[in-house]
Image 1 (tube, rainbow, N blue to C red):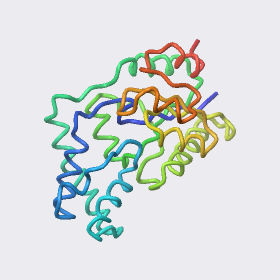
Image 2: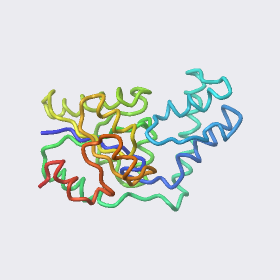
Image 3: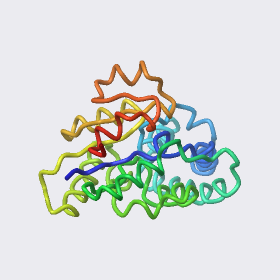
Image 4: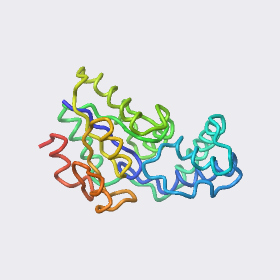
Length: 222
């Protein structure tokens, strides 16, 4: 028995720029400048992105962060309807199907997206129904803390509070957060980080895509 926690952006899907475009619009409305979000988002939680951008203009209060994320979600719903570059990454569906058939894993999310953002993105990819629990950016701004929340929810589903946890992500922050909670991490180079960068993180397994047969081995599917 194990808990498998999947990151979303760069791991399960590519949102086709909808997330960054939506953040830029929200930064304009709340912070007065779309360029407040001009930094690398990979592995950051939504609240951390909002805080870092708004801090540039001295507006990083919790109230302003909440307001920015409300505007972000409003724009995200629209942007996801129109982007033509959205895609579900290779091997995601077969891998989820294999986990369902095997029946030994609680399969959830470990994502910096707030829950509503996760729902919008995965609904666009017809994946939302595949995940019945998770750790989200609205659980905690710190990635390790939200992963811990997701891990505990998965363990409760298994009825085993010492079940091992495997995190599947695409950034060094995914790996660091997994290590912080004592989890194994599979790092996949389908996001913005290359194989060499991911190898430097000390991930248990680094693969180019989830099609790599070693992913199935790590998830006890063979």
